[in-house]
Length: 240
Image 1: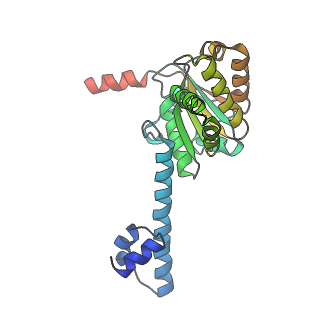
Image 2: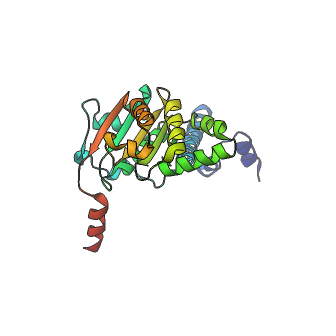
Image 3: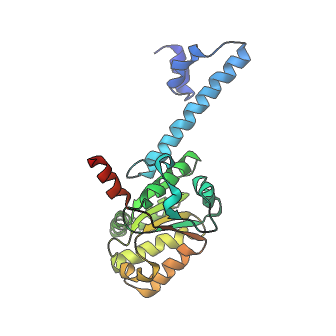
C-alpha cells in the first residue's frame, strides 16, 4: 500500500478517488484539489445512499422509472410530483394505499422509499406479518423497548400487506404501540387490500382498530389503486 492509498484510507476518502485522480484536469493546485474533494464527496454520498437502501431492507428494488400513475386515484391533497418528491415526509404525514392485490401498491411504496433514501431519509420496509413476528419475539425475549426505540430512528416506515392475515390480540396490541409511537413523529406508508370498515377482522378488537385507524388517517392521504392487475398483465406479456 503506497502513501497516497494510506492517506486516503485515513481520511476515509474511499478507494474510488484513487482510480480517478489522474483523470482530473490540472489547471492549478487549488482548482485540482477542489475537484478531487468534490469527487470524493460525491462518492461518499453514493455510499451513504446505498447504505440507507440496504438498511431499509426492501424486498425488491423498484423505482418511479417503470411506474405509471394513470391507474391510481390521488386525493386532491396530493399531486404526482409531490409524491415523487416525498413532500409528505416534511410534515410527518402518512400515505394509505388501498386496492386489490397486484395493482402496484408495493411497487409505489418501495419507489417512494428509494427516493426518500436518496433524499437522505432513513427508511424501513416491513411486511406487516414480519413486523408482528419481530415484535412478538422482542417482547418474549425482554427486548421490546429496545426494538421500539430502534424503529424511532427511521423517518419513514413502510408497512406492506396489512390485512392479509389476522394479527391476533397480542399482535394487534403491539402493532398499535408502533403506530402510536410514530403518530405525528414519523411518516408511514400502509398498503392494504381491505377497507377500513373491515380492519376489525385484522385486529380482532373494535377499540384498537378505531385507535389505529384514527392515528393513521389523521395527517394521512388515501390513494386508491383501481387499475388492472400488473402481475397478471406482466405474466401474460411474457407468454406472447
